[in-house]
Every structure is written in C-alpha cells, then in structure tokens.
Image 1: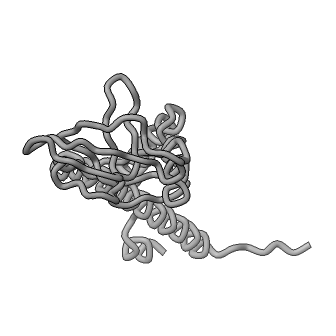
Image 2 (image 1 turned 180 degrees about the vertical axis):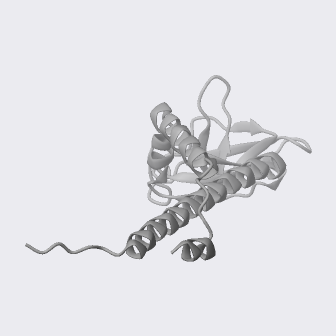
Length: 189
C-alpha cells in the first residue's frame, strides 16, 4: 500500500481558496442586504414625500385588467384632478376602501368632488356616489404579487428575516484570525 503525502503548500492554498470563497459569499450577501435596505428607505421616502403607497386587491371586481391578488402602486391626489376612466381608491367610513373606475365626476365646490364608480367586472355602478376631497389613483398594478407581499408580511417570515440578517451582519463583522503575510511564511521554510 502506498501513502501519498499532500504537500503543505497545497493545504494552505485550499484553505486560502475557502477563505476567499467565504469572503465573496459574505460580501455578496451584505451587498444584497444593503440594496434591500436602500429600497425600503426609498419606498418610505416615496410614501412620505410623494404620497405613493401600495394596495392589494382582494376581490375580482376590477378584472380582467386588475385581477384579485394584484398589487397596485397608488398616489394620493386631490379629487379635482380625477377624470372619468381613472381607477381610484376611495375611503369609506367604517368599511374597507373601494377601488373602482370613475364613470362620472362632478365638482361640488373647489375641493370636493362627487364620484360615481363601477368595478370593471361589475354589471352596475356602485350603489351610491362618493363625496371626496382626495383619492388615490392607480399608477401601476402587478397581477398575483399581493399574495407574495402578504406572505412576506407574516410574523414568521419577518422574524426569520430579522434573524437571518442579524446573523449575516454578525458573521460579516466577527473578527477573523490574522493571516501571516506570505513573505514570512516563505521565509520560515
């Protein structure tokens, strides 16, 4: 039986390669976390300064254009800017907001409009008009993504994400043993 001895330098190179791979993985994950954080900050700033928020569609009243499970980006605007054909969200006292298409709009005074709305999939207009001073207009919608956002908002996912990001930051900032410079290693041989 023959014994093959591995050169010492080979083991050192393997350890260096593993260390480099760990560094690349660590830096990539930290960059992804930083990008995610920057996106969260930008979305928060957009919500505060531009009155842009997200809404989720739970019913199919706006199908086929905006099916149930869609996520929409909406922007708050004065009711005076609303036109027939716009898709708007109006708040209802004591109920969930409704998002339908404007079929008619009539200004009552300089700030208040009376809107008649109808869901694209509904056979008739909503039972009563809405008197509003501001609405949220739909800028863009993405079908099916509301389920992903709702799932990501669950306590289990949020808790798991918090633990994972904390572990990543700890791993990235944990002190690593110092490596001897290559010149000293070669000098010892």
